[in-house]
Structures are given as C-alpha cells and as structure tokens.
Length: 292
Length: 139
Ligand code: SF4
Ligand code: SF4
Ligand code: SF4
Ligand code: SF4
Image (cartoon, rainbow over all chains, first blue to last red; front, side, top):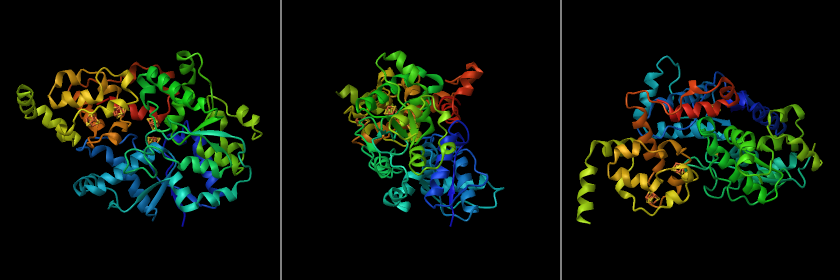
C-alpha cells in the first residue's frame, strides 16, 4: 500500500526543497509515496469562527481525493497544511450538520466525505510507522558534531487536539535529529510564534520575532535552526537582514527543513537538498562540520 | 461593586456581546482576569490592548473601542493564550470574532490592501504568507 502524500502549494513553489527532500528521503526509507491526484490548496490558517463552514470546503475536497485514491490516511510535511487539514477534519467529524452542508455544496463530486480519512504529519509518520531506530539504521552519513535547534512554531503543537507531542515541550524533532547523528540543544523559544503572515503587512513585527527566536538559538551555540513550516522558514531565514538592522549583535544562521537534514544523512544527493533556495546559505556551515 | 455587577449584566444582554459569544463559542464571564494569556502572548509588545483586557472589554460590550483597537489585527492566532488559559477560554477565537465583525461591516474595509504592495514585494513572499494574510486581514 502506497502512502498518499499531500505537498501543498508552497512546497511546489518557494519551498521546493522541502518537497524534494521529503520525497527522496522517503524513498531511501523504503516507504512508497504517491502524490495525491488533483489536490488543491488547503487555504491555510484554520478559520476560528464556530459558524465557519466556507473555509472547510477546500480541506474537505482534499479528503475526498484521498478517499478516491482508495486510502484512509495521508501524509503531509508542511506544518500549516497539516494543521489546517487536521482541524477541518476534526471540525466536520464533530459537526454532522456542517459536513452535510459541505457535501451538499459539493454535489458534483462523485464521492461523499464521511469523516473516514486521517491526516498525518510526516514527523508523526516517521516516529510511529517507520520508527526512529530504523531511520538511524539507514543513516549513511551521520551528522556528527552538528548542533541543531528544533523550532516547532505554533502549528505542530497547538491546539492540543492536533498535537502529536507535548504542547509546551515537544521532543519529536529532537529525537529525529538524534537518530540522524546530530546534537539537538535545549531551545526555550521552540514553540513561540514567529509572527506568521505579518511578513506581508507588518515586517517590523517579523524582524522583532526573528531576532528574538534566532538569538535564543544562537545563545545555545547551534549551527542551524530546523523547521517544519515554509512560513517559519521564510520569516526566520529571509528576514534575518531586518533582524540585524534591529539588533547589531544579531548572528546570521542557516534555517533548514528537518527533511533536508534527513536527505543529507541518507545521502539523497545534492539536487534533493535545494540549498540554492535559502537566503542564508547552509553550505559553509555544513562544510565546516565536514558534511558538504 | 454593585454598580459593576449591574453594568455587566446589562452589557451581557447586548446584541454585540451575544454575537461575540456565539461566533467565538466562548463564555466571556468565565474569565477571572488572571492575565496568563497576556503574559505568554508573543505579540503583546505590539498591541495597544492586552488579550486579558480584550476579554474584559468584551464582557463589558465595549464594541467601539474593541473594533478600533490595533490588537485585533496584531493577534496572529498562535493559540498560546488558548492553550494556557486556566479557565479554558479560547481568547484567539474571541479576537477572531472581533476581526470578523470589523471585516464584515459591509464597507469592504480591508485591513490589508494587497493592491498597494509592489509587484516585487508580492512575488518575494511565499504563497503560504500571502494566502494566510488575505484569509485573516481581508473580507
Ligand atoms: S498551507 Fe499553505 S502551503 Fe500548505 S497547501 Fe495550504 S496554502 Fe498551501
Ligand atoms: S509560521 Fe510562525 S506562526 Fe506559523 S507556525 Fe510557523 S511559527 Fe507559528
Ligand atoms: S488566561 Fe483566561 S482567565 Fe486568565 S485572563 Fe486570560 S482569558 Fe481570563
Ligand atoms: S493567539 Fe493572539 S492573543 Fe493569543 S497569544 Fe497568540 S497572538 Fe497573543
């Protein structure tokens, strides 16, 4: 049985390296994945209004596609897609009237959604199905001496109904990093929001958040920060120049997806890593550790 | 004290308070003003009214001040307040209901004016940023 994979639109755009490193790593782990046919954008950000039905339509359409692929679960590596799809799924499962309205609205679909699909995040899949010990056994190039701060942001841990680890002190990414041979550090700001979409209208907020979060990581003398969300990645990587203008002591540091570290340790090849898409080039840091 | 009780019960009957409670799905009077929501809010430094004050003002039905506040646009729904509130109040949902009230006032008075951004600025931003900003800041 193939694992259905939902990339989401940003992984086909500015975060193509998140997509390629996901796909190639899974192949090395002998998990056959298949991209969901006719997937659509999940719409981002779960609308919080109790009366909201409209913004659940896009996620539910994807759940219908998963059913049509004869699957009962699927995986995504984008934290935002995961959160949006999972919360919409929980909402329509809990409210039959909403699900009914959506199914009626989607009356041209051949398949009705009946709450019969599960949403999984790649981290959760790696821990529960593949196993971090099996992952460790497959590592070809251990990431020795690499010090990493794991950043979760909001979407993997909040609300607790979608969290697959402790809400205040998750360790799943640290455990994965350890399996790859790297050294995770204690990182107090790992679940503090980066400011999300404020990069669009209020860049001064992002500059401040990026300074606080990245400087907290710097204090732990890390080589890089690792994330699971293309919006966190954008803010924490591309807004470092703004953070530097705010704080002259700001230290530039690369920001990578956890899948890129997997692809590196599993030797998936340079193309899968896509380091050209970064603002702060990770190569010098990796070269200094003998990893590039 | 009597005075406060009286004002509260009056405003709790107002259509605005009823709407906020309905859309957010929250019971505003459950809040006992411990301040934990504001203590952990990563956006607090950029707000004019703190999250606990938002809840208090919503209890009081202070519609005009709430809808004119910077806070309802600064809050990014990170849900830190929700997950830490000892009374299990979903503060982020209350703020979302205020944002929705401001956006759906029939004026198409969007907070984010995409057309005012330069094409370069727009194309530099990843889709995930543009879509979520439009979801939160436009009607
Ligand atoms: S969260 Fe974003 S990147 Fe992910 S699919 Fe939805 S909109 Fe696109
Ligand atoms: S983008 Fe920022 S807001 Fe989003 S999850 Fe990442 S940390 Fe939170
Ligand atoms: S944390 Fe909860 S109870 Fe405390 S002030 Fe905030 S909303 Fe009120
Ligand atoms: S959801 Fe809004 S109010 Fe609550 S902690 Fe986050 S930014 Fe602050």
